[in-house]
Length: 91
Image 1 (cartoon, rainbow, N blue to C red):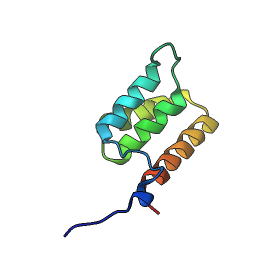
Image 2: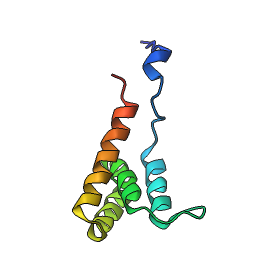
Image 3: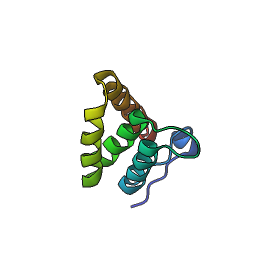
Image 4: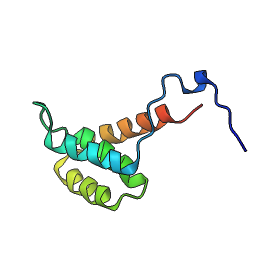
């Protein structure tokens, strides 16, 4: 069975990343890279997305980060994760 997806359906969609790639993005955000400081919100977002795909280390890191974050920061990270998911799912 083949599936034909039109280019318009994928226009503007982000690349779907693997759980390992998301985990690595979370690690990078948690320590900061290239002169930028750490972003706990961004790290939580990526760890959350990786954990949703079953990445066990990401679950652990997400839980540890949550202990250092305010409820507003966690809510923002979750909002960003939902936004990412919406961008990779075709309508």
